[in-house]
Length: 72
Image (tube, rainbow, N blue to C red; front, side):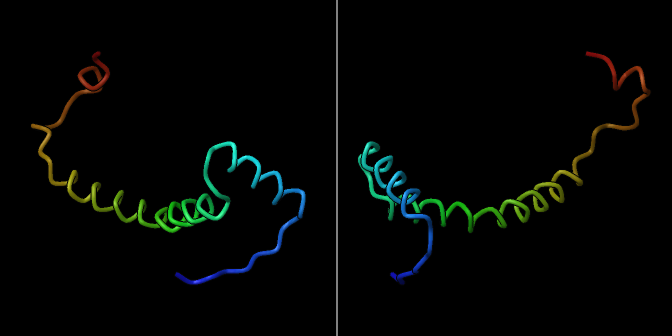
């Protein structure tokens, strides 16, 4: 695992450490979780594009009138 150094307000760091302690975890662990989620965010767009391509090949059975599309 590689170390990273960040700068932040001391009071903010202390508040975050206290919050993590109340959650029975560490600030370091919370940061690693956040970093993993942040890195995945770019992947969501790729998954969305892939899903849209798959759905583009679904046959809806023909064209619908405006009234048919608005029926509930």
